[in-house]
Length: 307
Image (cartoon, rainbow, N blue to C red; front, side, top):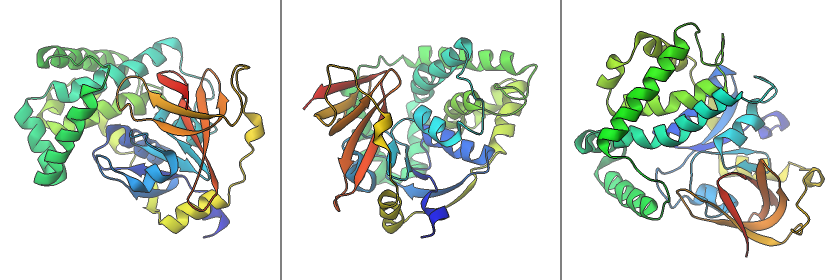
């Protein structure tokens, strides 16, 4: 593998994953060349968990020996130099959080069970549908997220579409004249809703339908499959400078910790703690061949505990 190829980002994803679509579409917007690893829609996922541990959410982005277990952190690592240099303003950040939390969970909750089941059957087949439902039921039993009733979920989704339509009356994209992080974050729940129930799209305001069309036209960039050799070479060839990371005074560099989400998908990953700040947590793990990998998690919404 050439040096240029070894530096390509690697996306671990599956086709119907909304958060994966967020990053795939960003790859298209910035004409990014990337490598693809298709993982199952439900655990086990040995292709990725051998590197990051038990963390179960998808997608994960690999850049060299670094793995980003959150689309916001991954977006910053991939596109910070190509897009808006400043963080989202308060209103935009609030809209992003709403889209990626409450609205995300409302999408399937707003659908009739038969409609959702038909969609999952088309995507996964009979056995896949059964395993997916069993997995998600287990995951949500352990979650701290409060799920809305179908009526409330439908009302929330309609309110969200109305808010977006008001923003899009005078601009082509939520981020302005060109798509940015806010667009990708707000698009993917509606992308999922339209895939589950295509008739919903026709009921949305023209400004939202037009925006959805413009977003879809961005495509997914230029991708090719990544082999295990590609993955291991990317890790081996990356000399990560861990000296730039720091820790609060009551934590020691290298002490063994577990990191886990606090809301849903509570499976933990363990490793040697390297960094913890307001934005992120970084742990070091090792591959089977002994090469270090560096796994990034958000600080907000995650727990860190000494192992």
